[in-house]
Length: 266
Image (cartoon, helix red, strand yellow):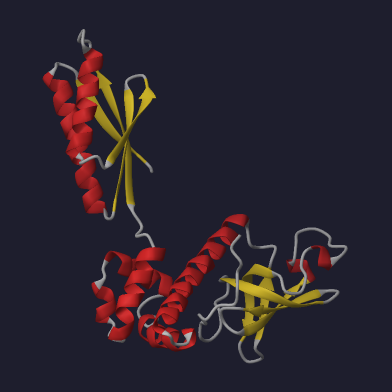
């Protein structure tokens, strides 16, 4: 189980109205809940009417001190420093998305922590060195590390201390897998040849070979086959699916059959 721990990453200023924020419950009163907004180092309040839909008999059935909760910002008074929050207006999809965002940033901070341990310096020291340069151009460290996993030259572009580079690159490679582009579609094959099954098998085998084995083909039924490719970028994925489908179609047509490819959402 992943524990949502206190993070090094802090945003400046106030959150925006409607923004989702991760909070830690600090005090539960009869009609309200006080929280710390983890990402902003500010405090907020959840009125009992914003804790859960319907009548609440005991507010502690829903929240307790120390609990991490995802809230939506309702109102902000910057002059007085008041931030009103809602717990009940956050749906499950929004909650999952926010927690996933936090988990990714925790993973990025873990990369910094591991790197600091390898070098023998404090985590906060290397975090400041990296964050000050990166967060001016990226929304989060994880976003930057994800890009760096694809393009190692990015680290050098930001003039990060050279004695850190090797260790950061190693740890990024260990903990972040570059996001892959997926293309999915189905190939409908029709043949009335006596050796139709052999023709189909041969066509699909040639399709796999043309994609260097980087394509998955599954039988869907009624002469249709699912083609699935995954590649580091869209251009590479397009090339793989194009080679595979054109090879299969060409071989089927050579034997007086027909084949048609249609895309699906991955």
